[in-house]
Image 1 (cartoon, rainbow, N blue to C red):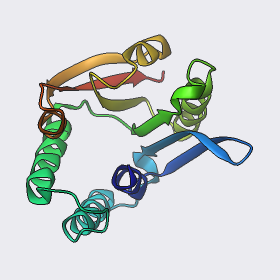
Image 2: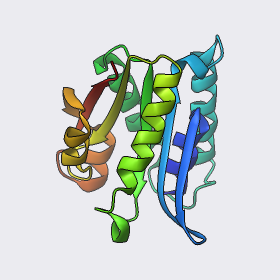
Image 3: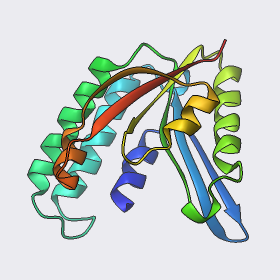
Length: 173
């Protein structure tokens, strides 16, 4: 989980955390392309490479077959870029603690990010997620529509069963 949080937060231009008392119960990382500097893709590549290097060097604990995991992750990332629509923003990571789901926390996190994206004149945002672990109904109710789907190499390898990456899009206007 530490790897995922660092990976997704590294290129995010929007980070929102929902807490009750001092307990984190939800997180949304997103990016609006207009927030990225002129060379945003280069920055993203360098940031991703830095996190992958940390994975290879064992900074996230003892993970077997790190090279294979990294190759699969890079391949999935290329597939995501190739199969995604042109968009002005992206939800890169959204999670709500299982004990607090169904209380509107995810919707509030999403509302705040969508409001921010609209304030930057974003017309469309995307989210990519995997089919067995996401709450597809949440995204549908929010107004996201399926754009494409393809095999998720990394999750399929880790779970030892076929997993699909779903690319969803939300038109903001």
